[in-house]
Length: 448
Image 1 (tube, rainbow, N blue to C red):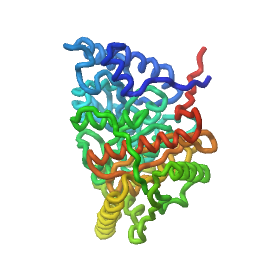
Image 2: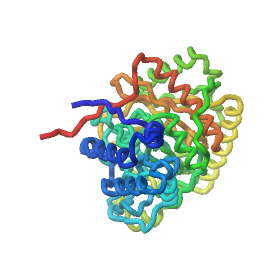
Image 3: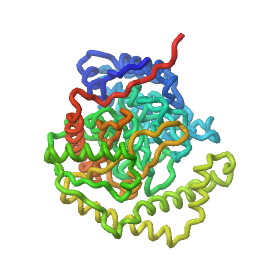
Image 4: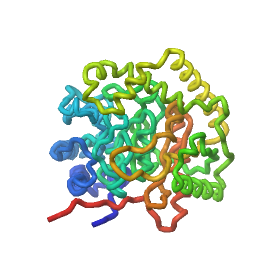
């Protein structure tokens, strides 16, 4: 049996709570019921115990002034990728080697969320150590297809309406790709803006925090809260956008290319495209530079893991670490120098336009759960460290989501401006199909 979810987004839930139309327990109970009904088919959760979020909700409701007075995220259910340390749930990094690992304390990010009033619901599935070995999560649009990786559980949980907000990380394409495949909004923050203490990573110069939601405004709600800013609606904007097929265009699937071209045509008709952009020839090596830096830094960071548990790691992770161990200093230094050059070029472009529009993924989510798809269309932007947003709304030939990726200026102000531009793009794209809403059909588990 198929259904389409009608769960409210974060801002709508926040308004209901503040207007006294519901309690924190009401909100959490609704999402607990959603998880219990759907997760047997989707497998978005690595660790979930309904008693913990319900107790947290009750404590918020009982606090002075009620739940609504307990912070800008009060009562909002949040998913946490299983790379983020939590005291209440195991944090196993998606690895059988650490399946029983129990952190002594929460990561600073989790402590901040609790202080803001959020209600962590549990741990969402990740690929092993955030690399390519997939977990059991299925795509809510079609459970026979991958949700992407490595923030697979977070993307599926938001797409299925199990939580309005969920955190992930990105080293290559681990936020934008699953968001594209699952048809949800995602913000990959500017590299280095949010500390990653207590968050397992692969590559210090690439690992970046991000989050997923059901709208650009919900993404902004969380961004403002984390930055300690008062909530302000995103401004209405008519952005000036550059667009690029990128050097990775030959990797696009036919259906993905058709969807991207349709989106670009619609943006051109709306008058928001200022120019087409092609990465200069000297930057042609950025794609490989990202791979080089990631492998080198991962091998350094996880050297002890490889030495102690190498035979028990998945083949993709073991191969990455072994490859990184063999890279020479000159090769790594050249990749780092090219990244610095690319950052300057992209900064210059974004001084002329508000954002750059590019593909988010090669196309629709591939069939099967044995692989997570190709991060090709996020590698370069993640290397350069700029914030990126997935804008859902396009569909491929199989009726599965295809996202547009927007790349913006670095920093808090740049992220807010990027989200404002992305919201406008989303409104334009959604207008392509009258009455269309980007919501997944969900397969419910078989009943008696």
